[in-house]
Length: 577
Image 1 (tube, rainbow, N blue to C red):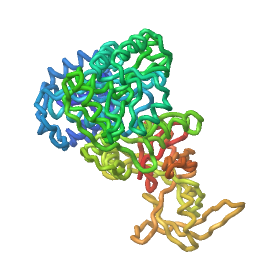
Image 2: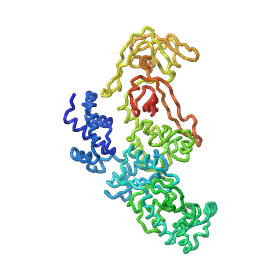
Image 3: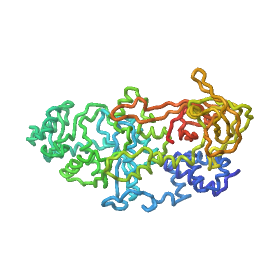
Image 4: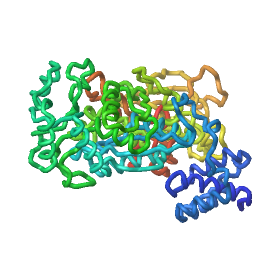
């Protein structure tokens, strides 16, 4: 069947829009899904249209991104025009003092690990507000600790945001402005708002706990002399730092002369070894936010006590102050986002990589079969709140299920398989729907005879004379149950095709049509403060051979088992029920 011109034009528009949203690379599956949403009348013929759709997508992907944007603007100018706030569907509360077209937000991750679900919440909220007010979003890598940062992590954060669909208007590094930040550090000392401290870490820790000032802060002229020595290389690492001149009696301990600059000897992933004096986040963040034009600085509640320092620094330097907005950190019970708990597991080989499905990283969620649209909707549903609550993981699963359910084929998989022999069963070619309601996903034919596999859990509950329904096939009556050398087997006879309400209905796999498959089921990574040694269950079983044709990344629903994402090498990862 040749694709009609109106459908062809719609496919081109959908492909161009998808490509522009994903750095020039449209995904055929997404385009097909969007087409069916726009033209449900094409569901019955979609299989014949898929080759031409894929060809259109391929041709779009060969175009430069600039040409894609130009063509999209020509074919569908309404898609490239900025939409008014009412059409965005954002349910976040209004921003205090926000002016349409002038809002600037920023997402400032440190490139010291892989992005996780907590980063997703912050990035999505930052972007949603920027779009809500037709403003700008800045992605700013907070890279001021060369001992922890790697190029690998810059790339991982960008990939994570790309997957989420978060598109910053400006991408920069704090290290880009290191000279300017150092100038402001010098100025603060010159204004007697900070000083160079040579006390040992232990001494200063003790003095801060007691609320007693050290001798270093008493002489401003000595502070200037030390300042020059700090920047000309006279001090070694840990010999001197710049401290904010706060109030050592302040009940807010964050204001008791906190560190603003320190000497770090190390290879910075962007600047090498040419910089030795690095700002802390406490100093760099307010300076960068002010100079970058950030109007609304959003960060998690854990920084609440440091807000006073943030604004005190800007006040003493007479710099513009953004509006500060706080919200609670996002994590789930038993799945901590703290690198303090995750990194040791990776370093000692307990967990192989950052995409392990037990982790809260975005690469892990992607590998499990979660889709970015579900994460965005889930994050927005939480809103802006300071309440330290851990939302149920099931809430995220519900958003994901709603999106993937209409797109996922229904197939059979049986774990811990038990052989079922149906006496005198006829050889059949069984046609099974790939989806109970969506005919566009097609059907498959399975050869069945008298030998099947059923789940060990189902077999364990059966008794002689029990009748069961083999889903989409027929009924059987159990006539024999044997267990030899610990291996269970069943014998049955055909019992008609009438579907009885009280009859157990179980999935099956024909012995003529099996594909060995193991499924990884992630569970809570931590129980309390302890690593859960049973956090990854490995289920072995057999699936229909149809599964063998799936490429890694395909999400399927195994009937009465759950959604799974094919991971390759005869392995799937359990997503959720």
